[in-house]
Image (cartoon, rainbow, N blue to C red):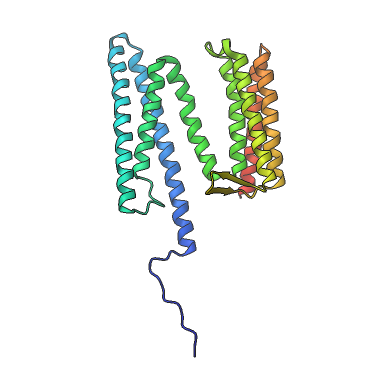
Length: 267
């Protein structure tokens, strides 16, 4: 008797189609984040112009408070939509616009305008850098190897610590900034060593387990980069003159070289 062919299930998704949907989903998420950060920077530029005039100062501050309330409303609406989606069992695997999107957008508004409300001038300047940096990090996270994302964060931490120490507020706290930065790098070294000893496995709780296929070169870079950035942070935060600027440029050059290397590996 001839073997019976299995019936075709119309709900099954072909592997190639699933990969395409996942790629489109990631692309749309990255575009959404980049668009949001771009609109955020443009909005902050407009707000900064409003706050620059004493006549419009009160209006600008009221706008900041209103936008914080809008963030709270959007975050609450996002939670409601998420509960509705879970109750009705919607498949959200490749949907960009969903309850969690509203929640994240609302929380972002709360955080951004809380920073602006805390210190309008310094807060807006900080967000000019933080928003594009976040968008760029999000792109690296979804487009590059996991180890390069960690390397990028190390470079940002090293150069960022030195840059923060050169500001009017941060200059008085150079040593605490340095100590905190070194602690972050030491924690990373311990975590990387733990992951390597567990053959690339990361356990979060009893049920969640993540497995990374890191090469020996990847482990080497994740051990080497925090050490290099720690040296850059120490030199940049303890010495004066042009040394801090040279330290930040060195961190940027290190990032550029590794970015070229990992970009070539993607091709």
